[in-house]
Amino acid sequence: MFIGEYEHSVDVKGRVIMPAKLREDIGEKFILTKGLDGCLFAYSQTEWTNFEEKLKTLPLTNKNARDFVRFFLSGAIECEIDKQGRFLIPGNLRTYAKLDKEIIIIGVGTRIEIWNKASWIQSEENISADEIAENMDKILGI
Image (cartoon, rainbow, N blue to C red; front, side, top):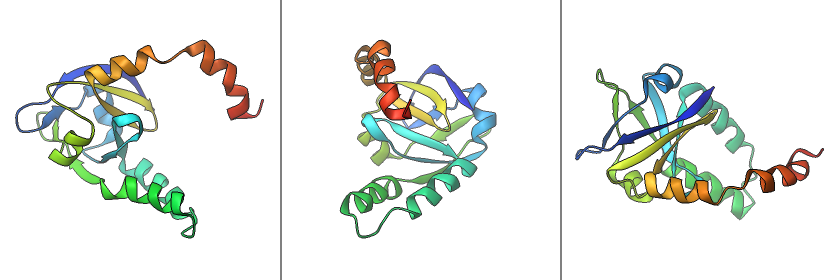
């Protein structure tokens, strides 16, 4: 399970150090793709396979489902962690997530999210735990 928040930087070649606490769970090779809310999602090979299986169940006849699948799969790439613990974020994904120098890497259970630092700070400011808690009964059906 991925947890925690880590501040890192992107070097001029687009490489990032994967935090050591996340590295062993993500594995040497993992899948990186466009995420929601303007960040990137990183999945271990196992979690990516689980995610792909869920995508396969979406109805081909539904345009929203097709767009959803395209969104995640078109930006997906296999990344490999080098001996220094770094991995390369391709330019198209850096552009999508507006990743420049300072980034935040967070663990959110089954995946890792990679954020532009300013975007993460703004996103955190918009999160109201009390408001979310009040609406969880609708999401969880309790």
